Image 1: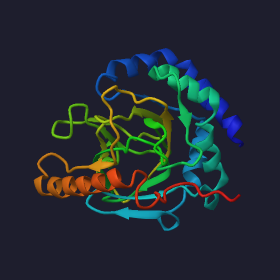
Image 2 (image 1 turned 30 degrees about the vertical axis):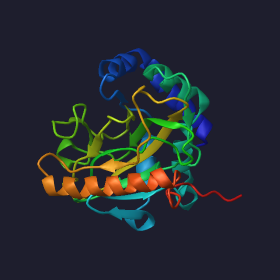
Image 3 (image 1 turned 90 degrees about the vertical axis):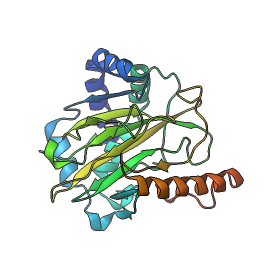
Image 4 (image 1 turned 135 degrees about the horizontal axis):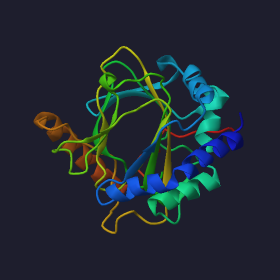
Length: 272
């Protein structure tokens, strides 16, 4: 299917539940605003996304104290359906609709898939509490929304690999949003939107298709430029010390080199 046909399906499904989703986001926007919607795409289409999802060997492994997962933004290396689904979320009507739900007037999708695209988490994979960096690759627009579409059939609560939001900071208990099959989760990103993914506990792969939306203005007036910052989970004192030091050093570098020493390689490098 083409992106336009898929975007029509996404738009209609979200539109049907607009009022419910707006209430959901409004109730949480004072801390970390979010909403989620189940059964986003028809069953056969969602299952096909899972069937053609690339294996670990076709993706880049990220493994450190911060995270352990597999990612890819180079969509022309994978089944064309996945690219169609990713860009369906960038359809102008869908972007405007999600903006209306979240109360954001100007929203821009990201054609380059900067830090977006595909992610896979297998046994013992995790993502520690962190703040996404505040801007796009050129530091021209503010990152304001994270869209996560989960496509692994029969994924259970006990499997782990679920999105965690920390509305009171990463020293308190998180709100857990299950990475249920055919669920779209949308969360706000700002300087207080700590989030993570808990460890996968089964020998299976949890697959996700992700997008970021950007805006001319930050979600909060108090927002300032920041890099991606990680920390440990509650009571991981040693990990916190190391990750705080890492973030401080990288922030000093960005004060000197505003766009960094090197460009983030996690973008879609399209042929001219």
